[in-house]
Amino acid sequence: MAESIAQMATLGGGCFWCLEAIYRQLRGVSEVVSGYAGGHVPHPDYESVCTGRTGHAEVVQIHFDPAVISYDDILRIFFTVHNPTTLNRQGADVGSQYRSVIFYHNSEQKAIAERIMAELATNGVWSDPIVTELSPYEVFYAAEAYHQRYFQRNLHQGYCQVVIAPKVARFRQQFMDRLQS
Image (cartoon, rainbow, N blue to C red; front, side, top):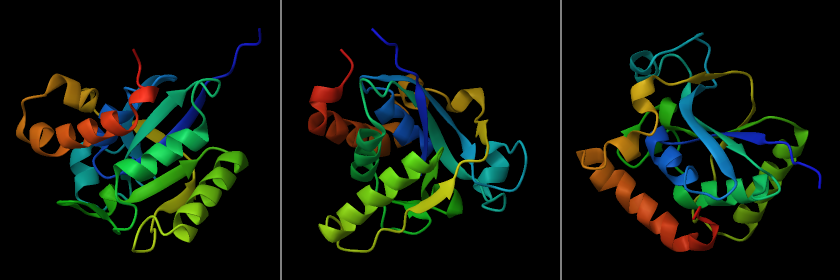
């Protein structure tokens, strides 16, 4: 039996804590790292990214087994767990660091993203136009250690209770058949 090669997806959909908490639960996902991508400042830190002046977005880098979960599925989940129609914001989080963005790693990922975004637009899934940025992957910088597994380590923190927990609950209900056991 041939072993499949792990692939990566790099996505930004608002606060990276939310996306990390969701993707970490999926069958076929081996690792999720919160970090920064898409900016012009090398080796940014959280404080500089929060200013909005580095050009970076808060993203997650997802390592997955395409024999278990496809890139197509990774993106379909992405478009259900955040609002891709709000420019540079997700809920109360405002700024270019919270933009909806897909950093594609190859031409196949780009084509899949374009197809899915076109399907969503054609089917009128969102009443407003999708503003998700589609950009080539260049470099990823892992966020500071305290951002990794943030939700898991801070379940009782206010932001986790009010923002992340409800998103995770909706995700779990909608994608129950895809969760790790």
